Amino acid sequence: MHRLTTPKFRDRDVTDEAAYLNRRQLIAGATAGLGLGLAGPSLAAPQGLEPNTFEEITNYNNYYEFGTGKRDPAENAHTLTTSPWTVKIDGMVDRPGDYQIEDIIGKAQIEERIYRLRCVEAWSMVIPWNGFTLASLLDRVGVQSGAKYVAFQTLERPSEMPGLRYPVLRWPYREGLRLDEAMHPLTIMATGLYGKDLPNQNGAPLRLVVPWKYGFKGIKSIVRITLQADEPFTSWNDANAREYGFYSNVNPRVDHPRWSQATERVIGSGLFGSRRETEMFNGYGDEVASLYAGMDLSENY
Ligand code: MTE
Image 1 (tube, rainbow, N blue to C red):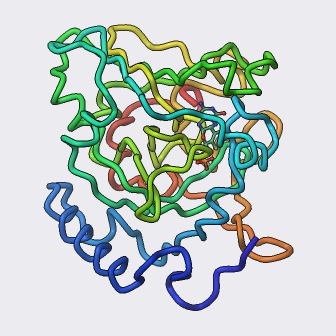
Image 2 (image 1 turned 135 degrees about the vertical axis):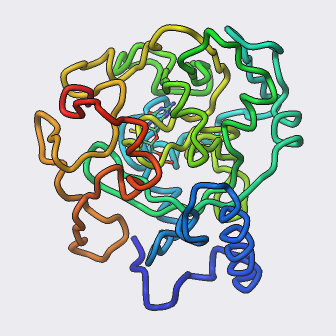
Image 3 (image 1 turned 120 degrees about the vertical axis):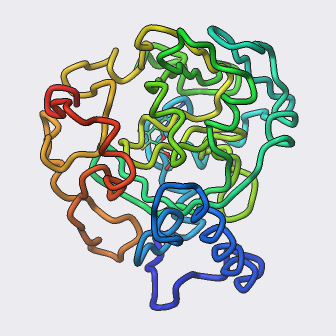
């Protein structure tokens, strides 16, 4: 693990730091126009957010289809074939179909979003994603009026995913969002990080990123997106409903039954690590708290 030093970035992982910083500015400008009523740069880069290094982001992962150890995905995920790749979009949409990944990405407006990632296991990182809003994809396929939820499914290919031999979860990995969460401008489909294609261990070629929720909602290597009226089956909720709810919003006041969620271990913060206080909605409360107005968040965890 590398320590983040005083400079804003480690330029080693980015071909041209000046270009990278420049792009950040552009994005800050672009997101200011989203109509969220935010001060420009805070959406993409809340104050003081320093990205973890490329090495940290790609060598400390959860991707159980490749093993349950943090190093397993980096060691095993190279076997995954991500081309050709088809995403089935079905259910309550006007234009259902099997979409080629090139078609999805080619028509998308790719932006950079620097987001905190807070795992339910109480560790965190900061990741500079590249991707596009899920809303733009859903608008393209046309969501029908009866749809209330979006269900997502990961590839299930035993020949390339050694972890599927173990019944840790009921495969394939599945996740879901309420439609208003899916349409929120902070919710993105990531296709890359640090300006490079998404590494397999981070969920190539297409993964969900919902920065105010625990990391397990960010389902990787998506092959199916379904618009539906009912709350979707979600893998971790199925494995242990008492520990993992459907919402899984980051909440320092609602502990996991087996550990506190009040603080988090910051990955890459030196030999002994450092901890920071976990923020409500992972620091994105100004943007998303209204989605849950009137809801009891300890009941709807
Ligand atoms: N998606 C699939 N298909 N399989 C997984 O095991 N792990 C989740 C999520 N998405 C997981 C997954 C968990 S627990 C976390 S914290 C994040 O991916 C980790 O993302 P990262 O490895 O890119 O940091």
